[in-house]
Length: 270
Image (tube, rainbow, N blue to C red):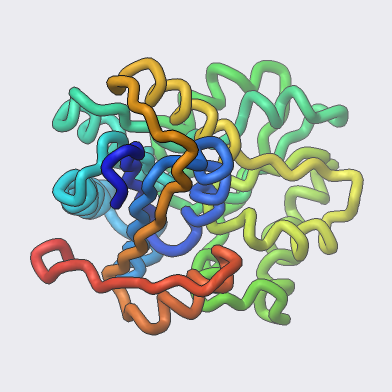
């Protein structure tokens, strides 16, 4: 890592958070980025909140040990389970988390019906319920859990027949209700946007929060961290996984857009 750049730690249940990392790289070109795919435990959607909180704590500790000055929880399910406790434990650093994009989706709908594709863990969380209560006034929200969709992205099967079948199954109830704005409530799902678009058509807005998270991270880094002179130095990226490093390198290279090396997390963080 270069000494002049910010160091930002980012983690997700798997490779989906790379959709957020792309936005972070655009917003903070001089930052050094450390990304963890917790693919040894993916998906988080069927795990208990206590398990997800424990994993989030372990991953954050690793990122801090690597010099991270700010943390991004690039996972809606981990945000629901662990954001509050991480902010208490690491209260001297910016911790930016995901939120399903209820507010922009409500603004985008013309039919008055918003759909949500998300993990069961996200949909059942108190955080999501609070967002609906705050922003969904007068709008019907149709939610759909999506078992298996994260795993499709984890395998890099972005255009497979299986991916299409799952998307058709999960979007059908939303389209039946005349949904014209769909929230992509998991960071894996933006990688399936082209296929989702083919299935739902051009008249449905697809809403995710990766860009908004990157903007919030940039704002908090500039406000809360001491200023540094980077002299136009481009930042680096380092990638880690709790799963199989060789498989992770193949999939993460595909999703990142160029070949990357992926290291195995140390045993104490697995």
